[in-house]
Image (cartoon, rainbow, N blue to C red; front, side, top):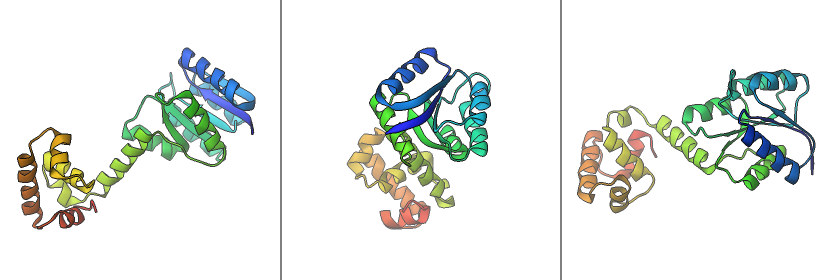
Length: 208
């Protein structure tokens, strides 16, 4: 399978060179274009788009997310990938809203990055497993309602653990507390929510 054009937007010289070498060796690509900043990438890719563009987020001047957003307006079919060290929820959602179809961490093994490029080219949307977990957790918290917000932070943590199906012993281990502490918080949760079981508590707080 041959890809016509791939672009790398990365300000770190070593990372940019390494990515370029890996792509040249493992992908049949007609043209590989590299950019040190978003401004030069935007100017070049707006005039002549690549099939796939691989962006870092933190760049000198304009950041990668803003560059993705602007390019997506001009070339909606161009596939944008993010390869970054940033795994916070705001960056993830901002990148996806801007038009990124893939979000990978720089800890991703090189062969997995290559697989992801092919996956994107074939219509997929690969993301690192750690990113997928953060997206799921963010949606879970967003789904939680006012009843959930009225609980203490520790009670929220325990209820989230209950929502994942953990038993008291597992919750105690995960949160580094005693089983009796988990039981006490759980009783307080039921009392505050005026429910008698786990399922009712999860339904009332929007976690089920």
